[in-house]
Image (cartoon, rainbow, N blue to C red; front, side, top):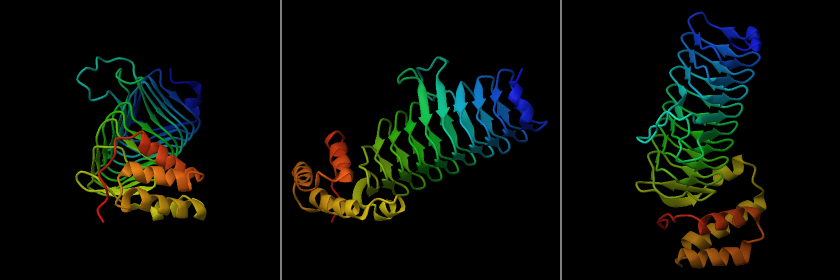
Length: 267
């Protein structure tokens, strides 16, 4: 039977909720939705209509899943053999129409992870073994390959394609239509095919309430690393020496020291 808490839920007569599913307080399962037997839906989560959640999946509290979105389907991996991999989703996320999020694979730790407060707009795709941290936004038709890691506050514009194993740094902005093959540093804007660093993400810094002192330090660091005409390694050394006491600059420098570098920004 569906767990007893489901008596507090609203389940439309046309919906299918498999035996073994666990529904929290106040869950809404709208018309023509499907909830698999190995699915947990946290308190206050809403499946609007025609949404599918497969398992094993753990969906947290107060998430909203819109029509024709599918969460927890098997990974698109030729070597996958129906192993019991998982999808973990935390709280207060929005999955708009036709979003797809796949479970993990045995090539990772078997879990796709999504944090809290994320927005996945129409047609976005999150592949197997991705780690999406809090406050990430994927705009329409953005596609993340397997094993992508997106740090808090990362934003992708429409029609972005991110290759497998790429890291998206904190509060970065990937402009619409970009094709991303290498790691995107925190706090910057990238664009193009293939993506290049273009500018400091000043709007993102302000919206994230980054301290004015750190914004100024990041602007100086950006100039040293990408605008000085020196090799990137030299710019990193100068930024660490001059500005390394600032936590945001330190994060930027450490990220770049452990990443596959993007092409230099054009002046």
